Amino acid sequence: DAGVIQSPRHEVTEMGQEVTLRCKPISGHNSLFWYRQTMMRGLELLIYFNNNVPIDDSGMPEDRFSAKMPNASFSTLKIQPSEPRDSAVYFCASSLRGISGNTIYFGEGSWLTVV
Amino acid sequence: QKEVEQNSGPLSVPEGAIASLNCTYSDRGSQSFFWYRQYSGKSPELIMSIYSNGDKEDGRFTAQLNKASQYVSLLIRDSQPSDSATYLCAVNNNFNKFYFGSGTKLNVKP
Image (cartoon, rainbow over all chains, first blue to last red; front, side, top):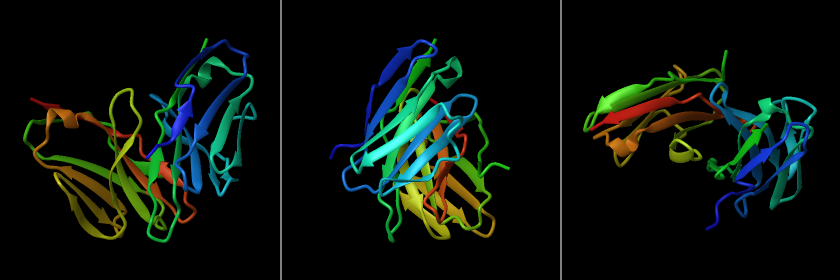
């Protein structure tokens, strides 16, 4: 079975440029999460969706960040304009929320460097 | 107060020993509890989940949950150098929001 698929795996961009990260969750999963990981702050939840609807975006650091989930198989995280402090690994994860419990599965991450 | 607290380590144990990793959480309404392992440069991968008080064993791994004390632990028996990684504790609340601890780095010395 295919896991969570993220693209690009690595991106280096200049400050001020727009960055778009993409995610395809595991087929059948109904929850999708965007996390950011840095050495200083660890794994931070940015936003999560249930059934394509954003439920909690309180972790989105600034208005420069936005996320969409137009359908059950695709989500984007956009940073515009990007800044050097946005450099981090961005993980997308998905889960199947159900009565029997749930487990969150991560993609391989998008390594972003803003110079 | 952070939702999930872990000692950052590093925790060093000799090969073959038992490694004990601990985690506390703040939300008493938390429903599900997880341990993830993350190798350097890789994404977190699930080791175990636990939902009710007590112990749950899977091979060399045992997860322990005490909801009254808001405490979760992971024991790794017969530790191997390949177990050297960062271990993340995660907690899921009623609203399907997953909180992760900052992780404990484990070093297993040959």
